[in-house]
Length: 103
Length: 303
Image 1 (cartoon, rainbow over the protein chains, first blue to last red):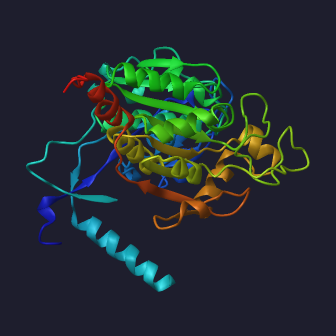
Image 2: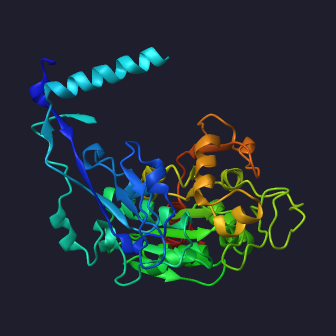
């Protein structure tokens, strides 16, 4: 664990989708930095496929989907941030190790 | 995973769900929009919605007073933006958004006057108004949504249509040289010129905040995808592939001469802030020169 772990927190966000406004441009799905969203199979009332949240835990409240949505159909609310745990540190390290091996 | 440093002194920056009560709809930004106007008329994948979101976000982040911010728009797809914003907004005749905004600013200099209009409105029909407002350095902010054609009337070729691009009126490719809006604005005397694409939403928002707060004629060009008219005829794909091409082709630069920032049909797009200078505005000069001299005591002929 890092020594200043008590002074760090992990930001979590919750994606809210207003599906009846969506026009299916797929900008939020494509440009989400943490790859949280995916296109759903269902239709909305206009006949487009609105996005759905693949896994809530991935969202980091960067608000980019809200900024790039042309339709005011998606927004992010910040959840209660959680503390840095030892699993997070291990996870980040192993991911970095994998990346270096691939290179 | 985003790790944030806990600053005990800073106020909590979280936007919680109770903020929704301030608006009238489901979205937190609905409080800046007129009730019942959303969904808007723009096509799926149109960048005008992103520009409107960027403007609304700029109002939120820059703390613009909604009583003192006025939006004027001309004719065109983006001209509808005036109808969606819950401010004092004016939807003027074709090409006359800048004269209207100039009059507003001179009548009440306390207002933040923002013109949101398209490339056809500002540079074809209103081209003269643009260069003369920039020459006088009227204290207004211009946000131009550049989609390279006249989208609303069916995709005709306009003053910014790149060479060899196909439109309704140029079915074998456009043979006219287009305007380079950044160079034109700089040459006309604008004090702040920036260009971003619809993908650069945060930069666009910060540019809008900066240009509203800056005295003088500020010009922000936003390159927006038009998948229905321009993208379809030129085989640029749907809105998503146009946005991906912006991501791959846009080059952030601050040192490039505005003369070299022309945009082709395909190829690199130079984005960034190109001009940021200080110059006395039209009202300053008018107060100093004309009004001071008119109020000065007249010299009598005898003495």
